[in-house]
Length: 90
Length: 196
Image (tube, chains in turn brown, yellow):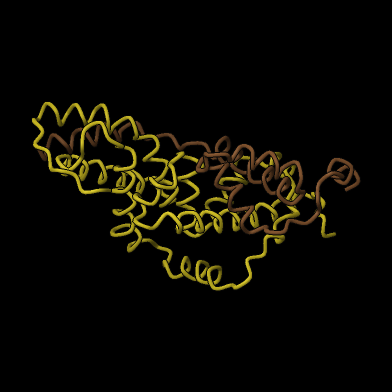
């Protein structure tokens, strides 16, 4: 907790418009915002602690989902089976 | 998907589209099917049905356009129309969770703020995967499409036949539910939460 306070001493501890800010941050993480979003993001992360925390938590969740929800191996016979069925309906 | 002019492909063209534009997505399709059905055989059937439908309706696919989104939309519709009905788990359960969540007036952003980045990083693949799998299918689907498959909001809107605004809000709710699950795992792992 102490460590958090030290690193966040320059940020305001309350966000005036969490709902709107968080929606924006999530859109940016999803690659949906473009014009000027980099500047907005930098400013929010520098000045607002709730935005900073929300952004980093959302970011890491996206990362672990992508890296840890590994793909299930496609059963070997599936491709052949599909091709065979296609031949039948041709 | 937007209505496209029906094509009249030759057999050779059909095979080329099928091999070069459809088949390369089979890994993603199977993964999506498995995470919808949780059953290897059902997932295989679902993927196979999807590819057969794709071949049958290949003339309504415009060569060189977004095959992956087109295929995912067919798979999602097949799942809803055929597999969800025969699923052992009644879909009522899904809606209950959805309704409770949609109907709560107060979306509490602080609710999950005590989940720490480090705790999430330390979680095992199984825990992340189980947390995702535990979400109601509508919420699970948007996370799979967005985070695992990298579809844009616009593509997701087309795949799911819902407005972009709904994609956005459903994703937000899905992620909050996921964070609830992850937080309870974190507590079990013995991570301190800030509330305590």
